[in-house]
Image (tube, rainbow, N blue to C red; front, top):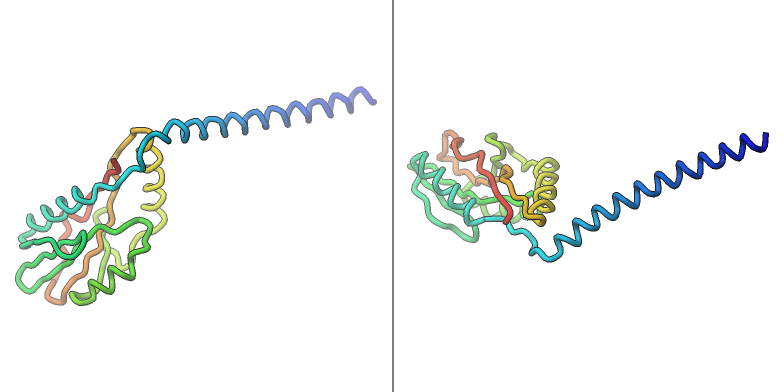
Length: 170
């Protein structure tokens, strides 16, 4: 009897050691990736490229455009006036964007080719974090961008061709 309980105790210890080794291996791997990436600068969004995409998309829909305030484009087509700008997946600038855009009209959000009354939250933020960590390792790819658009009453319909813009960290 004492021999079987000793085997059982030994099996528990071995399982604990194996699990501990796995945890240590995971920790070393993730810390190794972070240490390797320490020499790289924090990836930055390419806001200028995103604004060029916004401008081109709005022009393709017949809007006259010009730079407006910080990181915004003012677009007009007849009685329709839009103020469009990139929106951070962090969402911390929502109140500011909406209050500044209130002079033009209510703000809506374009994401993945669809219009929304509220900015998307979890999906774009999760994708942003994954993209940021991979960009530190030199792996870059485009992700859907969020565009905040203040819309005047003169707009009968919202333009859609440019609502699926992407952004890349570099």
